[in-house]
Amino acid sequence: MVASRTAEFVDAYGIAIVYDVYEAEGVPRGAVQLLHGVGEHAGRYEAVIEALTRDGFHVYADDHRGHGRTGIRQHGGPEKLGQLGKGGLHAAVAACWQLTGIIRAEHPDLPLVLIGHSWGSFLSQKLLNQHPEAYDAVVLSGSAYLTPTHLNAAPLNARWKGPEAHGLEWLSRDQAVWQAFRDDPLTTEVPLLKLFGPIEAARLYGRPKRDLGHSVPVLLMVGRDDPVGGPRSVHKLADAYRSRSSLTDVTTLVYPDARHEIFNEVQADAVRADLLAWLDARIPARG
Image (tube, rainbow, N blue to C red; front, side, top):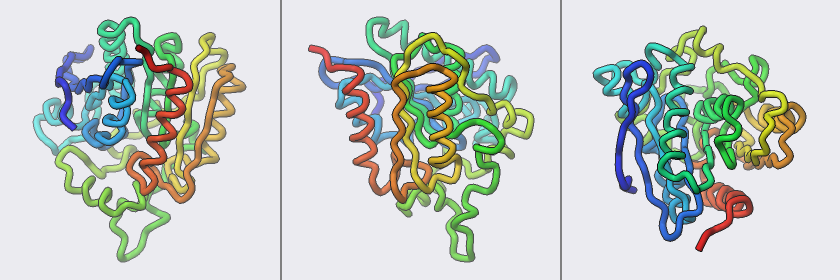
């Protein structure tokens, strides 16, 4: 799928953040800010972006600091892909907030949905804590309750290790996904802890804020065999949004046999359909 336009903005540290804009088909009902995971880039979300635009949503998707096209330019090549650079995690969150401002400025009258996968969902949790009034709905895919006991720090492919292991079985049951990730010049398999370092990785931790003071519907989607957090961790996160943040519209969907990348799983069609149905119930079509 070809973006309607590709643009960039400069963050507080002078890093040019590259992002794509995909225009909604028909009368737009809302805008989506899509945040990808660690070691990857926005271009891996073509199918879900296409589904969202068909359903009437503009989609904005950036390559975060150190990642994808942003990372190639930032580091002068692919060798350091995934490394955040000066400012670290705080700067990565701030850059995502800058993009939120761009979207709001371009579409002030449309509801804004924040969708984050994996590390992108961790960034989304922090944005929701800091700016709950900015988003009309939040979707967290492959997320976790961000404490040391609920976010897996062990090798993510440990469950599937063996002499014949590919190494990326943890992503999906679809073997084509493993090879596509490995062959992609804009991805890296270096683990998050090594990419970020222990200090920046520890900055990921943090629970949902108490009494957000703004009613935001939240959807949590997770594979039953996701090694990053998995259902237990995500149910804990959902409970925290209800009890700590006082949110009243929190939905959790668990997909049997699915692993981490539910949008790239065998049942991806059903996952996308569930996402659209949830959004349709909260952000009605216009016109």
